[in-house]
Image (cartoon, rainbow, N blue to C red):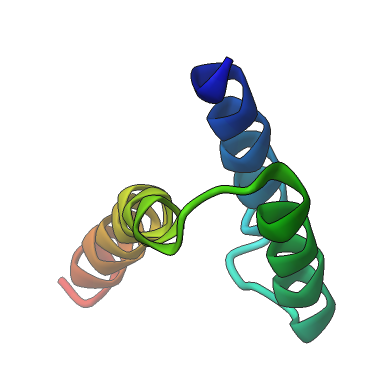
Length: 68
């Protein structure tokens, strides 16, 4: 059951960062979802690191390529 709940949070985060940034409203919405689904803070941080970290890597690669 927890994997299903975590996948819901992960999908919402991916949708929120699809445009490359998190708005204040996105952050508030994700915080409410975390509380409603009882997802531990450490788990949320790991999901953010996974998704946002890969987004940062992608942006960094594009920036490196564009500067060539």
